[in-house]
Length: 346
Image 1: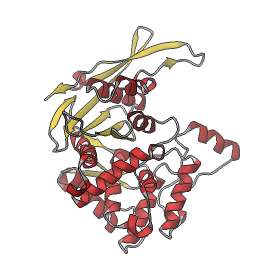
Image 2: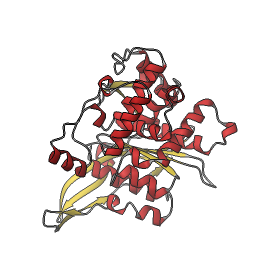
Image 3: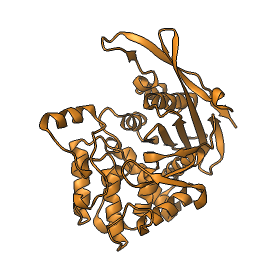
Image 4: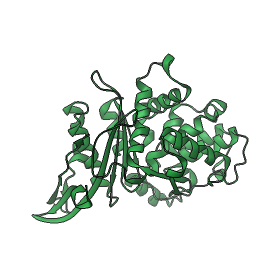
């Protein structure tokens, strides 16, 4: 399918086309077989924060969680892109304290919060955010703990040559079933390495997470046990994966443990869906070419609808993201978004 055929959404202002948005979708099973898709399901994609569960897996496999007493709520924050709410900042500080580290050890920077409400409060109090306020502070706190668990220096824990990041790179390649030289690594906004690989490999990661949650405890491999714990942590504490009024939190709450979802910056998204009576676990990955997050969430909701995931009542809880109202400053409706794609079965 060429780029013109991969238009997934059209935005109108009045009756005029204002923007068209190209997107790609991959739906796979836990063996990585493509079940359906749209656009280029093998598009080389920077997963950004949607890769956090794989990075968290590498942290878990160092034994850091057991060594420092990090619990499932801590793990959820490690997998999250939080809103810098007080509960998020306090938990990141708690994680550092458990590991015998401090905010000064972190190699991420502060930034304006994702939450408008939090941002207004910061402005009113003239608050200057530090590293622990980063939306990725949970991931960094986990990385600091993992470096200590390995007996490695904290200096440069964020750099590709550090022993911890070498382990992360190997783990990502293994769990996504991609050869190391087929992954491209760049530097993420939070200063850690971030992988790019085929879109269907991101879907596979989340299919494996969901499949592990389906597998009985006695039948799980050690890695499947860790993946199942990631699923449990994220779905038990969705408010730590994102925050108040955020899509990831609303999605997981709406589906009540049936699926796990994670956004990545610049409009990538991944979902793992547990198996039901007639189907095994599945993974979904979506990338919107122009990085438009509003379009991303609408496309994700439409994919869930086309795949008939959950009930109509569950999907209706996401209607504000599925069909976002387009209003001007006087609350006058100015246009609409039409989702124009159909998933094509393989």
